[in-house]
Amino acid sequence: MRFGFEGDGKEVAADAGSLEGWFKDTETLSRASISHVSRPPAPGTQGYVLEAVSVMADSAPVFGAVLSTFGTWLVQRLQRGQVTVTITCPNGVTITETVRRQADVPALKQRIIADCQV
Image (cartoon, rainbow, N blue to C red):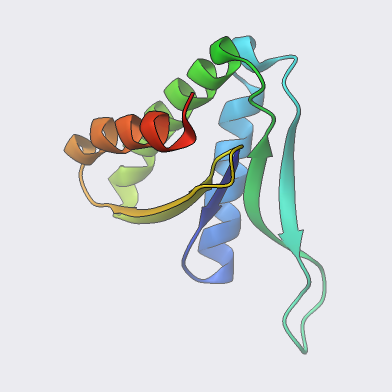
């Protein structure tokens, strides 16, 4: 699964880095392959820009841990305001959602389960 974000470069990098840290700190995901996805720098700037987090969710328990951690992270992230996230499922389905309130999180998690067919 891939979790990407919309916004300016610093905001996207902060969100991706924060979520990556949450995934890496989750004991259930200790054996999962977690990596960040970077894009080349804009013209006139140096260094690659962190833009997304990728997690190999190859079993139902790992997928459940990814989804639970993402939901908890998202609730915390909403304290700074709304966030637009793009999730790419292992089956290739892409979900883009702007989450504005904590009450939106359960519906997004259910959509991920349904669309990713896990």
